[in-house]
Image (cartoon, rainbow, N blue to C red; front, side, top):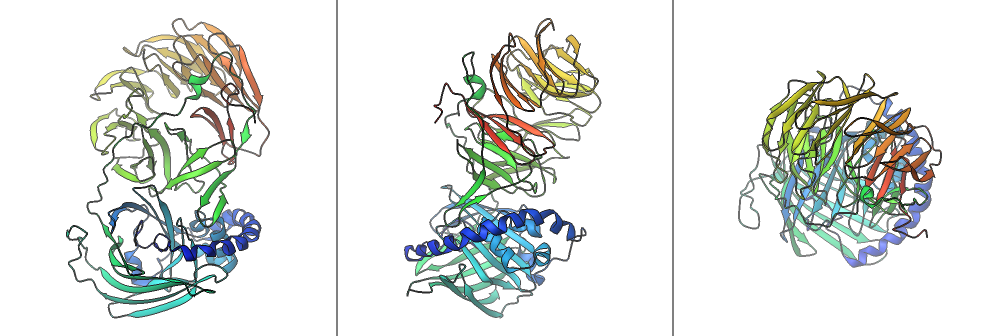
Length: 636
């Protein structure tokens, strides 16, 4: 089609006369989504439990082989020269429709029994192009073959009833088929579709005449789809020839949209150049704090996704993977199914979904390095996305990478990426290409998140060693058998290292040599440690203690908490307690300001992040709160 994913109908149909259908569509959505959405959430766990845990037989007949596997990434260019990146998501059961707009999910629930949806097999293709335009198509694998159920992200969204059969089960050259029905709920738009299968006999070329390489077993289709208004003599006709290849989906298409040329051509190898930007950094929370800072009351922000046609959808979930933040002030989370990366724009009213990525498998950790959002997965992959959500590269690790990736240099605008795998291998990856610059084994599983400071990479492992590596070469500078480390921090300039141990100690070490400077007791399970210019501040569930960096002398104490937020240049530190947020002077411990946190439902974990110029606290039960400073904003 004209832009985006080659299967996308929503991306192609932009004719202004058809846009009038959205008013009727949204009107019917208002009551239905309100009634059904709570049901969707309540039935999730029960319906998923009902699905056989053994991998079921893949539906769709032999045509299912053309569907890309979960996490597959493809890069294509269209007839206008616009490049798009698509990601495939494969799922079974109710969770397969949860990324769709609320109206789409609610309508599917209304049409089918829960037991049928619990066994349904889905393929979602999400795409984003050079201009940040994005959308998604939802397909279903069934006894009918590969069918298109819905499409969203364009100026018109579609929900086909019955779904359009793109490839029948066991499709062979010479087969023909057709279908017709509603293109939107209520019949304001209808569709008629006719298809024929043929041999994929090339060559098939892109705009520059380069041949698109085919794998064995590809099949071609010719189709005509007419989207028409039910009340007016208005229509859009999509005529297309396409080539499907096993495990790749549509790799080539050519045709017309109302007699205007269109097409899409897969790029292989799927290289995507990435150029770091010089975008302005968001103001930092820790840098904005001073002795006169005053907190505005915290606001609980609803999480929502907005579609140009289907409108706003409330997003709910339970967040178990620690979040991160981008340098331009957006929040990065993992959805409650654990398979999508979510990036949120935050304001005083809501958290709005900027984009989501599907790296494949279960997301283990997320981090932000320079302009990149990076996810590690259960498939032992490290996957990088640019600021628009395009997957630019991926790298296969030798083991799981549980700790979030970090920047090789916190001070550089475009830093490389440091990752530590469970195999005990620490690796530096080039940020633009994802290639290995160095890799260093430390002979034991990495235990805690990696920390970089003063040109050294600090890694704690399962053998109770703390290791310092040269950030440029990866060479081991020193090792210290210090004990089982639970928390780790370092001063970016001096390299002073502070660790909390599971034995209950807080230890400071010289970053250059690894020699111990001082040691003291810390009661309770540690939740955070921060190293500043002249203080080490550590928090446990029972107490918060600040010590002189040089001597280890205690300078102040306070109660415990759930999170500690500060940086190596901080003069004010943020304490997140179970029921309050406190700003305290790092040097004296004086309380600068304090705001209560409203009670919420049960939560197994609490995460606090400095996101841009605000403090964000997100609980595993999905409650997100945001605090701003009164000195920089009014209280309206």
